[in-house]
Image (cartoon, rainbow, N blue to C red; front, side, top):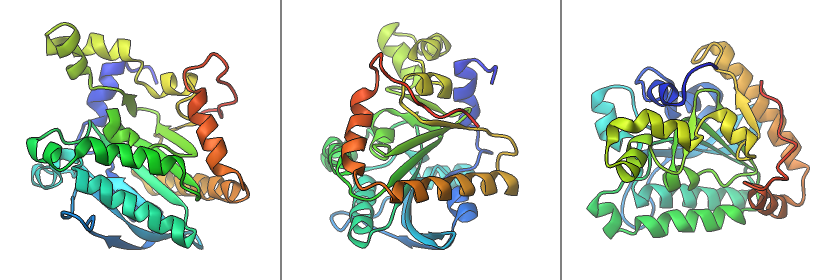
Length: 267
């Protein structure tokens, strides 16, 4: 918990940390992956489908970076294309149709910014996700498990509950990008990270997230058991709420205001 902000950025970029597929494999059972956005193609940077959490069916969506150099190249280093966001949106709307909660795992430095992504409507794809998620009538929980970069992360994080692992980061831009813009010098990334307030503690104090998840025993059976129990408890609570959309709207309206309060204690 004593790490400097940029130390956390470097930590969550390490290839040994659990990725989206690790969470899917260890938290859920019977996962069936769906592919494609029904418009252009399939984006391996986003993995999604249906699974069982305990005795309840859920829709699971995760940004996947991969571990090895080959996996990371195949997954676009966890930088989704517009077809990835459209695939995620398709699965979310399907979940709403069948009354399934949605659980998202976010780990991206940002959406793909290549020419092809822009030509296929990257900005519009992210905007459509923000719009549709804000009115989705089923419970949505998003967990930032590594990097949470800009709109690429927010496109899967307009949720009823947003949680962060204790060393995860959440920011409007990467520290390197911020330093390049402000000082024309990416080597000042550490200074930028300190100014961006990107740590889990910063996000919680601003009301951006409700819960900070301890990384004790990260990647081990006990770690996943703890996260699974929290998800089951939270989904049971959200299932009793008949006014999710209005409360989700108010949740995001409160962010940044001086009245932010009531965030849950860290675990």
